[in-house]
Image (cartoon, rainbow, N blue to C red; front, side, top):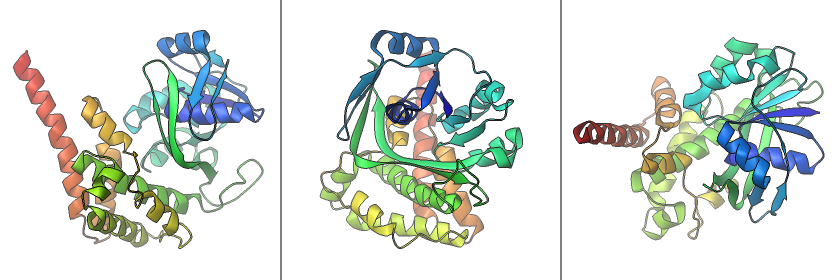
Amino acid sequence: MRILVLGAGALGGYFGGRALEKGADVSFLVRPRRAEQLARDGLVVRGPLGDFTRPVTVLAQAGPGFDVVLLTAKAYDLDDAIGAIRPAMQAGAAVLPVLNGMSHLDALNAAFGRDRVWGGLAHISASLGADGTIRQVGDWCGLYFGEQDGRMDGQATVVPDILGRMWEKMVTIGTLAAATVLFRAAVGDILRAGGEPFLDRLLEGNAAIAAANGHPLREAYRPQMRKLFGDRDSPITASLMKDLEAGGRNEADHILGWLAAAGERAGVDTTLQRAAWVHAKAQAERRAREARAAN
């Protein structure tokens, strides 16, 4: 199988690298600066599940000949990402998106056709350092995919109910994003500060939103979430919080805003989700105001 990975950041680099380890033919479509790092140092991953460094194939432009495109862009960059991978998709490849949220499915379905767009999600806490090293934190790590209609016809053999799994991921990242954005701290910090009741209320509220939209959480999944949000030593924070503190673009609309809107349409109370969304948006407005004043 030939795999094209858009980007070689925390998600694309990590899972593309693991595919390389298992013998897949993987190429990375990256920007010039990242291409220089990879040419000089190779793909470098550090983490509790194993370290590795290896040379990789990098491309400046997509082309035909790939079976699968692994799409790991930020949600706000989706339009540009669609344009970047279109040459590979024109030859019949399938696209596996592992973006945060679920709103990207509509755009990808419109661009390439629903039968060529898989549902996908990644469970991982990882970051890309300035030196190009990908650092994974904790043992919560997995990549899941399947066809949107539940059919399994060859390559997509992992998850028959991928939309349900994506809702589970939405509940998880929605809880993580809202909590760490509001408190500006990691999960363990929040728990040690006495925030367990808040985390429980937020988690159950997000689970209610999923259920109201036709995707109740599997009982088998709840222990995983309880473990994730019950570790008093956990250093995990949402990427949304990291982006917010760095002052860059963020996915508040695609995670917190989308989840709140889905709850409101279904008649579920979304006070906490809206509070987190407004907090993220207000911080962006404050930074914009300060930048205008500085000029």
